[in-house]
Structures are given as structure tokens and as C-alpha cells.
Image (cartoon, rainbow, N blue to C red):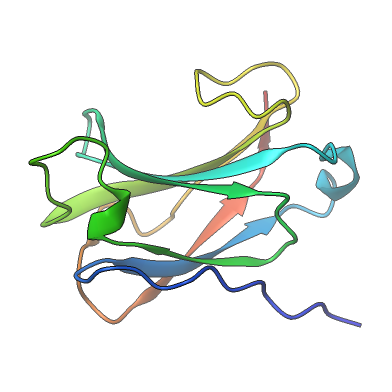
Length: 125
């Protein structure tokens, strides 16, 4: 039986919607205290927006909007690269051994369109 996706509240448009899935080979490796981070970054550059989702149950639906920008005065606009990471111990820093990550195959994506993007966690660090 498939589990329905967990919805994360919508935010302030314009933004990006999507779903994060996990490779079945790694699903049982996710610790109970793990945190999911969905990240939008300037192509080839720094993060612009991020969403922290505690205790994720996959698949997870997400919305990254203006409430998710990382620094005051920034805005989420134009094209961005989407990625996601499971931080096994909750740390927002660089990936640690045991963390899982994935990229959106449609990168770069346009903020504010109606497409729902998928990020598949398929890389074990």
C-alpha cells in the first residue's frame, strides 16, 4: 500500500512546489531524528532559500516560497537549482557520512511556474 505524500504548508508566492522521494535501497537507513532540507540555490552559487522538515515521512510534498529565503532583502526569483538532503543528525552544515542527498533532474527550474518538481534522494554520503 502506498503512503500518501505528507504535505508541507504552502508559503508566500512566488515559489516552487514539488515532492521529495527516497530510493527504496536507503529508506531503512534514515534515523528517527533525521531532518530533511530542501534547498534552492543560484545556479553554481550559494543557497537562496531552504526549508527544514523534521521527522519526514516519504514522499514529502514541499513549497519553497518567499518565507524560505535565507537572508533579509533576498528574494526567490528567476532560475534556481533544487536539491534536498537528509541530515541524519539534523545538522544544516555540509553532508556527513550516512546523509542522503539528491538533485532535481530538471535543474535549473523557474520560480513561480506551476510545475511540481521531484527530487529523488539517491546518493549516500
